[in-house]
Length: 320
Image (cartoon, rainbow, N blue to C red; front, side, top):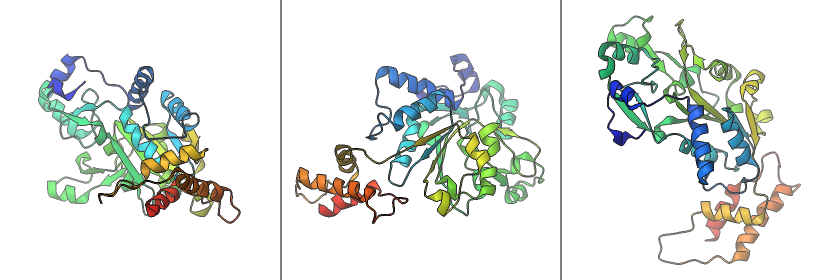
């Protein structure tokens, strides 16, 4: 359903025949369409055509939450940010909803009250898929309130509401990405007590805000990234959470010099605005990539840390 259809109310949406599907089914449906049409699903990702990408496709087709596990500089974040292209271009929500309420199945008090008041005249907004992607870098100071939510005493005082009123809930990042994709990068850095707060979302697909007996159902596809080095150096993934992550996919560095050169050429800043055309000999590019290959096998380099693709990128930029 496209925004140009001009649907602006709940009644018009119902009459259009639009049907609500879960975000995981939406991704699965769009992935199947792209595969049938021969579209490039993860543009700009090289070297994973027979390893990571097929596994990721299988996970999406299986409605799985996913952990990308690999050393630094293996395009984990880049892959995760491309997942948004598997969402519909536009999606309808109840106007003013903080958690992207489904017009057919609203969950927030705001949206339920609005529908009770206006019925089929309830206003509808269309949001672009780029606004249905959320991301959080796991840091030791991340709180449950950041991810899930909390009560807002300032809102209660301003609106003269009691602390038992559902309207004073302040939703965290994950509820605000309801009906979308949420990514947590560097998962082992998240404190265990914060990881526990994710268990209900992963299994029962709901959240419970402190001080309220209500549970708010969420429709969200969750992806994680992690570096194996972090398991021992900074933290770990608690067993109950790891058990709830359906697919774990191992990433890797380029397995050929040619693939490495292609990645470096794509990512490096080579087109400078100085009216000077610079030609880099092919053998120079080869030497740069071979430096990384040798370093990844060298006894003088800490292999637990890995040799990031960013090394070859910055090396080429310095050469230029």
